[in-house]
Every structure is written in structure tokens, then in C-alpha cells.
Amino acid sequence: MKARTLIPLGIFLALVIFLAVGLTLNPREVPSPLIDKPAPAFSAPTLADADKTLRREDLLGRVWVLNVWASWCGACREEHPLLVDFARRQPTVTLIGLNYKDERAAGGEWLQRFGNPYTDSLFDPQGRIGLDYGVYGVPETFVIDRQGVVRYKHIGPLTPEVIRNDLEPLLKRLAA
Image: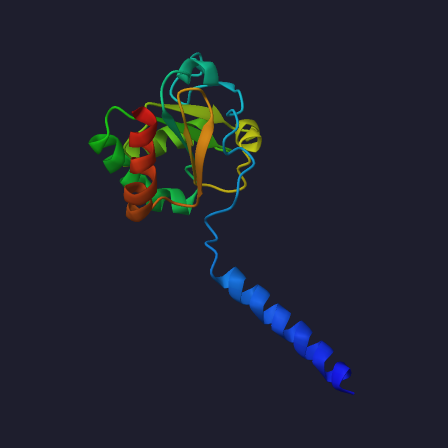
């Protein structure tokens, strides 16, 4: 009789512990299989100039940030002023935009209207590059080191705290 009452109690306690641990996790910290692996190769036209192509190999030798965005993305609009400020304060950082599943004209107009923090923006209308990087929503941000290895991924809009506490210290360490 005791065992019969202890089994449901044990199951209940296990579920409570499992849920309590889950509540302590940060939903923005989704492990990426790309961390500490070479960034996926790409070759794509830039948003501003369909005849200009940018490749991952063009960025080797420098630390760079890849920010995935779209003109139709509300969270990107929330994040964008922070990126404009970041680019102004950190002019030596190579900030590459990935215009994801967007229309070229809409993306260009959006940058013209809200400011262009990017060193360059890739145009990815079908989302193929985004797929290779494991993007499942925008915005997402990656930091890639000089050897082309992904060192960081942030899901969702950047915040002042994320920029100050995560992004800037990592960029400084990688640039050293």
C-alpha cells in the first residue's frame, strides 16, 4: 500500500524538479551546433548592389558580426537603433547584415529610413544562407572570429545589456 502512494508522489516530485530547472533557463540561450565550428560558407549578392558578391572567405582575417534582419520584422525594428549606436561607437567592428527572406527594395528602403549600421548587407531572399546558419527567426546575431569560426549566437533582439555584457567583451577578446 505504501509503494502505491509513493510512486505517484515520486513522479510528481520529479516533474516539479524538471519544471523548476526549466524555469531557470534563459530561452535566448539556445545551444547552436555551429558554436566553435567553421561558419557556413556563402556567396551572395549584397543588398545595395546585386552585381557585388560577398563571400565568407572575404571576411577571413577579421572578427565580424553577422546580424540577421528583415524589413518585415518587428523585433528587428526594436533592435535596430542599438545596432546603429553600436556601429557608431565601434567603427572598427565589421558588422554584416543578412537581409533574410525579404524584398530587395523593402530592405534598402528600411535601411535608408532607419539608418544603415552595416559594413555590408547580404541579400538572402530565399533564406538559404539563414538556413545554413540555423536561423529559425529574426533577428539573430552571430560573432565569427578571424579564422571563420562561430564563437557566439544570440537569438532575438539585442539589448543594451547583451551588447555591453556579452558582445563587446567577446569582440574585444577576439580582436586581441
